[in-house]
Length: 106
Image 1 (cartoon, rainbow, N blue to C red):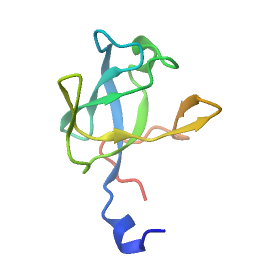
Image 2: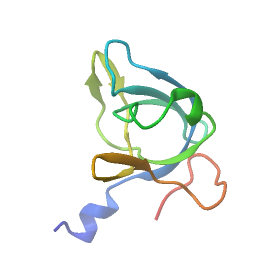
Image 3: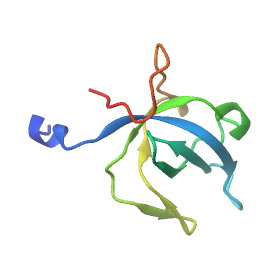
């Protein structure tokens, strides 16, 4: 269990995928270029087995925007996307309607 105060530290935001590409020499990683409301970020995510880069362009996702950057295969990831997993299959969270990039998630 975490406290509500700890939960409030998370900066959850809507991000729009503007470009996506496979990370070389991996089967699982994609590099996503995101618009998070006037700021561009990139996130490395292990969703390449379920999603093609082309199929993600224009999609709105939810990210943790204030996570410390990490390197994957020498590429900086500037956040983390939110997804569900069931029986090894990953499914991205999706919004019911279009929301401007950068909008906070409560």
